Length: 226
Ligand SMILES: Nc1ncnc2c1ncn2[C@@H]1O[C@H](COP(=O)(O)OP(=O)(O)O)[C@@H](O)[C@H]1O
Ligand SMILES: [Mg+2]
Image 1 (cartoon, rainbow, N blue to C red):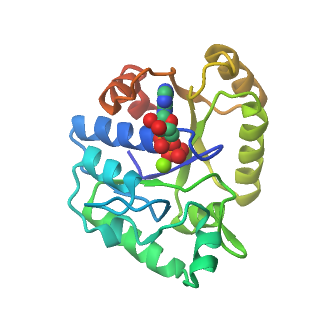
Image 2 (cartoon, protein in one colour):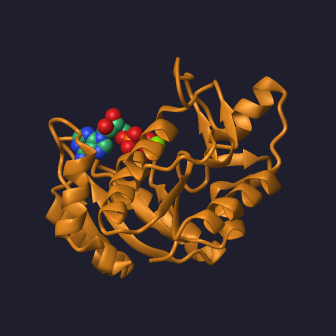
Image 3 (cartoon, rainbow, N blue to C red):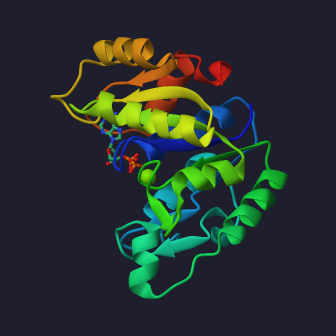
């Protein structure tokens, strides 16, 4: 399997859960998987990794790469990298992210890169998550939520990827709320409107257990579809 960039239609849509579960499924099938979260923002954790996402990614991939490679930029403000860097008067050097990725790629068979927010989350004034995906030369997996408006959000993200020349290898529908689209209806609509395959559907879970999500991915043969 090749490396992927996991992006989504929104923040809080399940990118971390899906990336961790994919890492777990890959590890279970004997693949040496690396993980990366180039930009993380939010409340810093008290011990271990600063970012909760990075902690989970490292846990389920079992990597022991340094935090500085997995997560070159952490800003303790829950906003976009662009907004946080501006507020904190910090500069962002995209070359540092690209060289960190190269090192991880050299150390592992596959690297899963989790984005931040959605496809147009700003990193610099004229540089968005989509630009980063292009510069990393990765295909994308798009995590799609199920709340009303998800078809619109998915088609917007797909159109943007088409404009940038980013290949979407598959959609993963993740049900994060109870009163949105029916999973089957959403799959049918997205496939007929976009022509891109839905490679997995994850139902709303009472307790989010990454191992259980990993089992769902394996049951749906997700690894063989990538
Ligand atoms: N299928 C699901 N069912 C219930 N809760 C979920 C599901 N997927 C994700 N969540 C929860 O939704 C929240 C956001 O998920 P997360 O993976 O952190 O999103 P993102 O990385 O896109 O911001 C987390 O609290 C997570 O545990
Ligand atoms: Mg996340």
